[in-house]
Length: 93
Image (cartoon, rainbow, N blue to C red; front, side):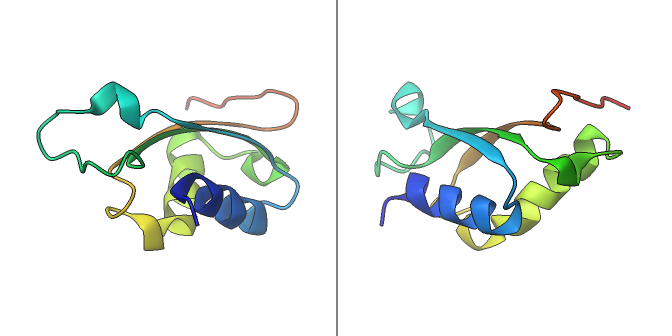
């Protein structure tokens, strides 16, 4: 199973109400030191879930990292996250 699909499945399981967009950005990092040549190592995740209500950015990211723990640091080498509530709220404090 592709890593992108694994990410989607895990996040959907942990955040059932989520709107998810997952982008494989591995092609932008080819040839960089310590980047695996798998073509599936760098991802960007945009996720909206009501589970993020009243959580700051760090708390939201911690929930996502905890959910994806089994995939890090291998096969996921890098993960860019944008997490908000369904109303678009991104809490920065």
